Image 1 (cartoon, one colour):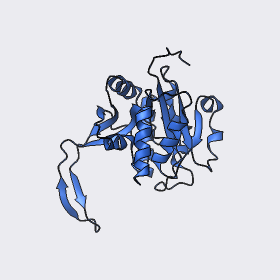
Image 2: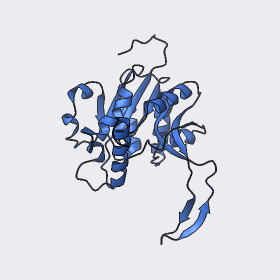
Image 3: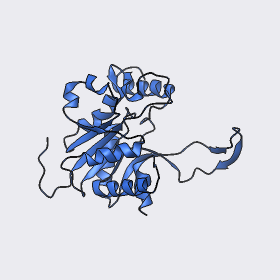
Length: 240
């Protein structure tokens, strides 16, 4: 592990992996489905664990998770685990609280366990831009498709202008103390935000949008798994 000066701003990571994968046609949680002999969770962790400038990290797990012990011991030895919650935001907060040694001013990267295609170059750009930003930010992709708002009967209500709209991705990078404060406030108000940027926005702050890649897919549906497999195979030198 890299040695840090006492006044250095360290970077940590939290990967919430307690989801039940209700939209995947699988008996196994999606983070434990395999691509190329490795689980999606292993692929998601790989770019983070490959860096030498991260101080450590936490993976949050469901109480009945029986798959984590089956991952390689070398991987499990490099991360701590913490109990996940019923919602993603609760899992993230649990992971933040479990970052032993983290200070309020340290940075934390929160990355989806179901995003196996994070490009190390995109991660590097996110860290470089956010470390110079007073608030932090997230990987995101500008929307290119025409957007339609539908009704309950799947009929178009209106066309939504796409100018200025971005699709949020992860990792998202913010100060540990500020993110804990923001999550606690949102949960106390009965809100269940779906990403970290939303709770930072709730404080009246404006996170930085760092351009990412459309290939950084979140595996939610069965077809996403095939797409992710093709991306990873291409990067490994296989057929595009």
